[in-house]
Image 1 (cartoon, one colour):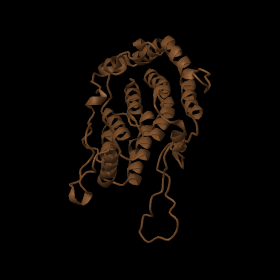
Image 2: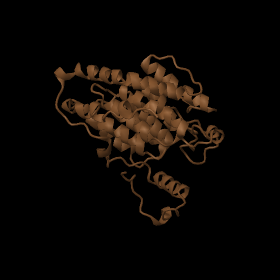
Image 3: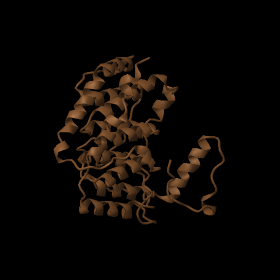
Image 4: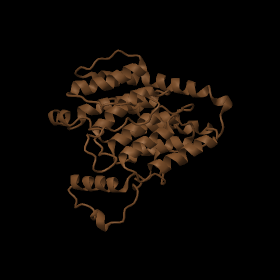
Length: 304
């Protein structure tokens, strides 16, 4: 069993130490947030994906926290993946974005989105939080009671497939790509893998890209990576500290939130889809479904 000393260094080093820093108030950023809520709340998944483009390259704390909330709370996997993509490309002077992105990856339970988030962690400016969660995830694969034959057959998720904008259209609908400033998102296809080796390969490739290692996907590689991280984790934590220190001269005081404190009550995905997702969760747990939609007052997603 590996030592927990490096893996569980308090997040204070990443987030709360950054509480002496802050974001400048920008009226344009606040307006972006208002426009996003108007385009996102209680809309179908296709429109919620398009709305996320309004928060791309955000710099204000509220918008970054909003993207984190959508990436963890939206019932649609494609929307969560899209929000995470926008999150990791947001401004990150102090490491707060990296902290939230790592937390979002850790909380994800849908296999396809989980791996997409893992790959996108490579875009972050601060490295420790991402590397720490990637190593933990890779190590967990050994102890997870997955049956790989069935797991590989259900990897990923199906994107697109929206109905025509106007009912009665006879032509096959071809939805336009989401409006995004990132070419790699246009006409994308969700990640696919067919075996444990391919899955591990996706994760190790991301670690290689972040840390400059040259690891391969092979049996027992998770144990080697754990030992490597026990030796190198402190160095990457110090790298983030030094990177953050460069901003101290121009920092403003503000307290960043712990992920447990981020509620985002103003985020309201499509009510019907959210209820269907809850019914599915109830069924998986062997519980009776919730009150039928026609007899239940619909509301936004509940806080954890």
